Length: 268
Image (cartoon, rainbow, N blue to C red; front, side, top):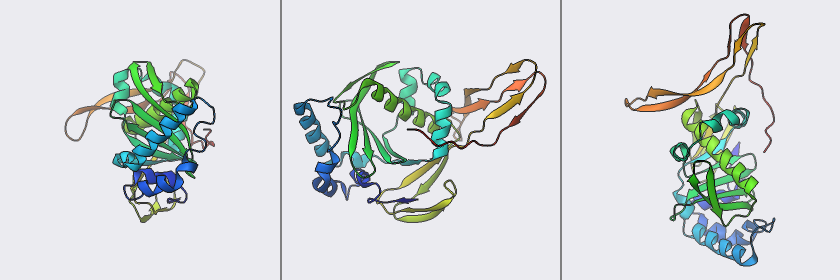
């Protein structure tokens, strides 16, 4: 894997040395398709363009400290168990606990999440060549409801984007995630990706992975299905926290065995 500003042009908005030059030279391309669905009026679109340009020029996104590269296995773990994980993110308090201003790379999209001074959260999706195509600001006003403004997409896409983001943050915080740091301008042999990894940007990148196994149970009697649970535990400082664990299925009769990891192509 190679991470650089040729492959991920918009990462420059998070680099204090590059952000001003980037928006000055690539502003037209950056905003060329962000309102393709026509959700914003011309005046609303112009306001969003100028505000976003000002934010990038002023280094607003350079305060984001964590840049994540999401492995296919990490996303697959999330995708397969999304329904179970969402039940554990049932309240506004649960969501706030896992929230983190960050940027992450998955396939050919850069996701950027940043809290605004007014308490709303700016969410952007940018193609790897540097073309913004999703942008909105949101804020939770109830356990299961959030409001948005300056949105370039419909409500279904807003909910999908927010759900994927919080599921990623939930699994990273409570799951047994593997984290591998590739410092800026560093080359390593990634143990997660099993490949040479070169980071040519001015930003440290963290590779996230999580290896979850499905369980196959065969029996003719009563079977208790597997499920996820947030298990209370003490951390290294003696403080109580929680860890996401999986309770394996078990049967009254018969047998059960662990299956091999199933690799499936991800669907965005």
